[in-house]
Image: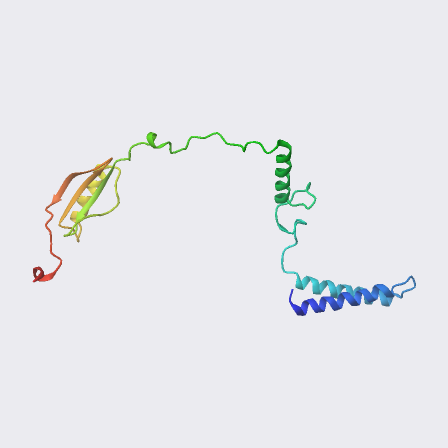
Length: 188
């Protein structure tokens, strides 16, 4: 609520207070209609100034938190904290609860399976072997990929297929890898 809204609302509420003090059993209907119009004006100012959602709880810490109908402040979060404190009072400050160890879905280190085997297609760049394409799970598919690369318009000087399991093993080499100096004229 900004300052202008705050002063307008204060003025409207003070006017309603004056109307309330002047009310009596013989107040004419015209005066009651005037009170009604001023009350409607105050409600309109209040509607314009309220920006947030209506609080669902009476809790200052969690005004829009989840609701627990049985809690005195309707706040489920605070009531859960209070229940835990009451439970600790009843059960005493005994040993903290230790959950039973559950087996990991990945197993322990000694039980882990060996790495899955993959076939890595690599190409010779003139300086080093570089992975080309993605590692394959099927050897035949990797060889077909290399054959397609060799037939392509920008084929490398050499290709090789590396088998990865627990170690790397070069299975097959296509072409001859020749080391190429990257400097022109042989670095003269």
